[in-house]
View 1: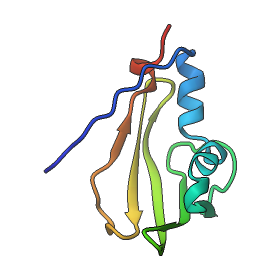
View 2 (view 1 turned 90 degrees about the horizontal axis):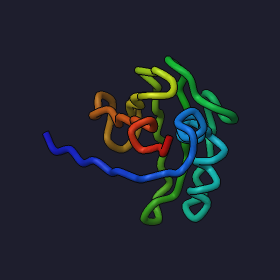
View 3 (view 1 turned 90 degrees about the vertical axis):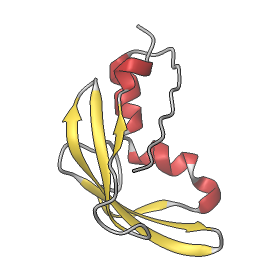
Length: 105
């Protein structure tokens, strides 16, 4: 199965990077161009284990709804978010993040 990894070096404490990575408002701000917004589940603040968010966005001129759930959570080292509904369908490959590995100490 295809996999890709993005590594970003951030000069901030791991806890801050982890929290920002799961913040719905930060994500919404970063996706303003596609008018992405949280319309279900957790719609403000940070996501935690077993919490979900449903996003609505316009990509390529088409309006999409996508729901993701946080299925693993070990602050500040690692979390996994899985798309459980949306254009790729349920059961897609989880997205894993390890803010500790990318944050400067």
